[in-house]
Image (tube, rainbow, N blue to C red):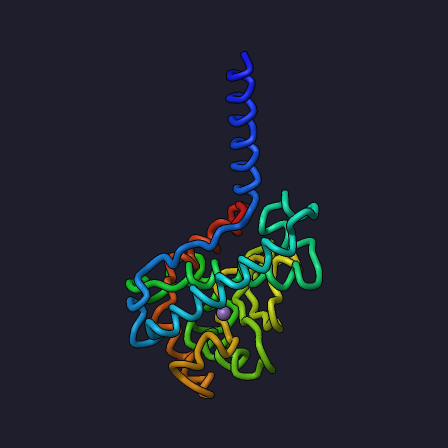
Length: 222
Ligand code: MN
C-alpha cells in the first residue's frame, strides 16, 4: 500500500514537473541550414543571430515571466498586452520567429495574385514597394524592424518600429519584416545597412507573404 502511494506521488510529481516545463517558451530551430542563405547571409551571421541573440531573448523571457500571469499566456498575447522588459523580450522572440520563417534558401521570387494587386495598387510596382521599405530601413534611427503590414481591410502600409516594436500592438497584420538591428548584418556588411537590406530581397519567400496576406483577407488569424 505504502509502495503504491509512493509510486502515485512520484507519478504526480513527474507530471507536475512536465507541465511546468511546457509553460516555458522554446527556441524554434532555424528552419533551414545555417549556410543555406549564403551569400546574402553568412553561416556565421546566422549562428550568432539565431543561436546567441534569438536564444538569448527566449531565455530572458522565460526568466522574466516565471511566477507571473504571463507564464500562462501565448507569445502573441504577451506581445499584445505586456510592457517593459517582458514586452521587449517577448516581441523579440516573436519577431525573430517571423523573420527567420520569412526567409528561404529556395524562395518564391515574386508575389502573385491578390498580394501583387494590393502592392501595385498601393505603390505602383513591387520595385517601388521594395524601395520604400529599403528607405524606411536605412532611415530608421538605431535598432528596430521595418514591416510590410495589412490592416483589416487588406490595405498595405510600411511600418518602421524602434527596438522590439511590433504591428500586433496596433491591430495591424504583419506580412514581412526586415531586421535592422546591427546584429542582423554587421558581420557580413559592417556599416553598410543599405546593402544588407537590398540583399535580403533575394531570400524573401513570397509564398509565405502571400499566405499571410490571404489569411488577412479571409479574416483568419496569423
Ligand atoms: Mn535580430
